[in-house]
Image (tube, rainbow, N blue to C red; front, side):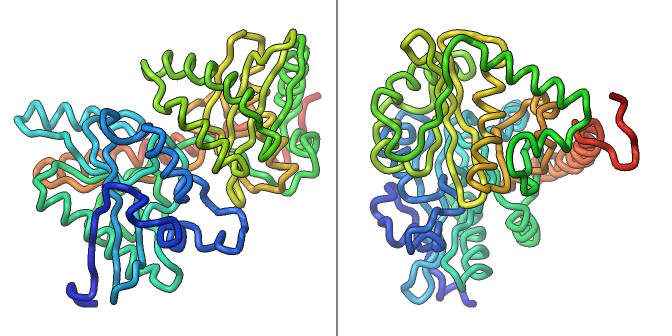
Length: 395
């Protein structure tokens, strides 16, 4: 494939590309009305981010949607942004920024291929079927060239798939291994079927937590699709604002995002809300993929024992079992998820540094970090809550 055959372009608005072209690369499996594998890279999710002002001017996430065309046909797209900070990424590079700036360099702006504010694994180099290899290579090489020719410090691709990480390493990018805690559905018929795989002590603890949470003095309901009403978003916005203010200083998403989500994304969402004395007091928002449930946001106006675990982790498991989804990804961080059946799972990101000396230093760090992550995953898995084969439980 010669350089003349590939056209790389950047678009400042996803509407300039259009839904048909974008989704033909991002979610071709959904063109017949099926659920997309990844709800976060769809046109409607990314355009909701943009149209709501959750990305764009003043946010530090300036859209630079990347496309690759061959013979006049768009064969690949990537959600790329010019970043003026490292917030909302969940793969932390603040120490790299400080190191480069102490050495007299300039770390920002940088280029980021990611779904903003969303630590969920998925394809980042989105290609039309039949152009997987050529499209991925063109997007990677195009992103690196744009970073280099514009004099930017670095390019980062966060929460990509392992296959993308391996392919990009072959093209000179550095892969970074991190971890999250995911729940796996092994064909359970119900929550009790899952509990039966746990050690006796962990099983009793979870039952106790669920009972205490459900005794908070109200009811818990799950809403999807047309069941979600504007009043539910009014309540959830309060919860989200409280959590956002405590975690990040200001919420990443605007109120308008949830209004747009009500119109275009409600079939991709499961909203779990707790009501007490006639008003909503806590909630958790999940997004639904073809084979995974993604826990994204939680908040409350009243604190009750274990209600957070019930809404965010146990109800997510209930939903996944009911919908026959293979995985629950419950977001970034949180070793407390381990005791609740969520096991450590590797996640991947990619990095390219324009300064070769800086790149070598980062590469050395990543090799040491990967060994530490591998060891931590092994240790944490060993301490998981599941029964150990050939070891009789103490009752």
